[in-house]
Image (cartoon, rainbow, N blue to C red; front, side, top):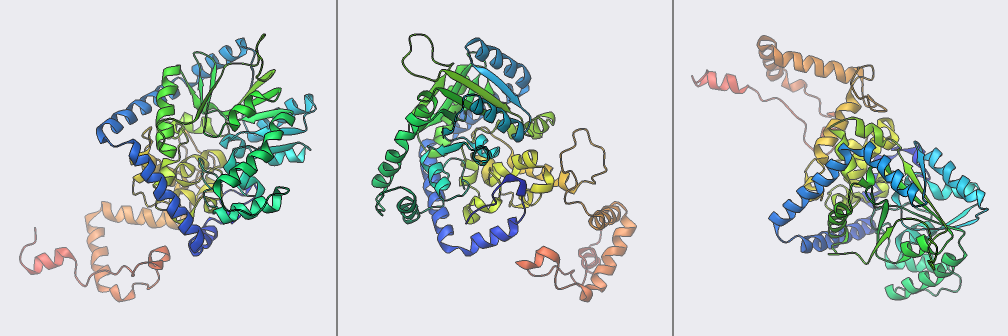
Length: 481
């Protein structure tokens, strides 16, 4: 299943893609098996419930503290990085970020780029934008490489090719890697990809990476990975361009250590990941490796909208572990591509309205049972169900209503008819006489209840008033209050 080619398509077709995913027995089996495996791995790292809760509260406090002082920490980060020879760039939109990156590459006549795993680069659609300018960009993360060969988007923020089987990957490699035989042996598949990718690190004119955390105190970019491709991407080419959302900054190194531990345990069930890359500048005199130029692109793309609202600011606490997706009953059944956005699952439901606007993501905020599993496992205690309820409210709000922090696309789901129904209903509840009259009419005219009641009767029996109200039954028994 191939998702829409670009974010500009937003949420169009969510219902159709969800129905297609539910009808795909193979996809559902793949996703279910992967989710069960990841949940078990994560659980093995948090055996002590009290310790886990204390750890979560610590992670939450670190993120909340950093966000409370975000402007100051970003300025401090820029100053520290600049002092160490890093060129810092600011981008408000994906277009600005892409233009900055393209300008850097064109100034150096770069034609071949190697890229480490980066959800922000997916967010700005970097690969396609570079291709349009004649610059080839090759993914070096194994999962990202697989979905790039398949011309798809990642279906999970930590494991991009989680929807693929070994047979799917074997067929892809046989078709796209010259001389590759068909094999379903995992080790052989990995070696085939590594051999194909290895020479590209040396031949690349520039490397692009994401950033997991940025430490303002020391001017350090912290990258978390398991395969070593991130280390090669950021050290072998002469130019390294890091792309980061503005919310990823923390104050001190010890804060990043706590968050990194929560990240790896929550994401893949590892006590510690294979590689932690800490980057503090380009190659210095006397050093034998590392880029000669290092650039950091700081991206807003709707994050300041979330930041401006005290409640919605909690969205920016996310450390991109994917635990909420792994435990979400909706994601576990439809997979990531059904959402049609870069960030699927619960985290995508609360961040996409800021990146794309509520107009393009209004169906996302209702694609949840509000069971609360996502909030229970979130390592930084993001209250996702409460944020979804708030976003639903904003989607239903009259677009003409004046609010302190209006969201882009406010009122995307608003209809005058529904607003009138709710106004009538709330007014009736507020006046006892009107409520008694409505109750009397509902019980006497119950035979007129429609058989089809919008979405309710797709999977449920129709709602129908009882022949007599509870008050009438109590009065008949002499127990009326």
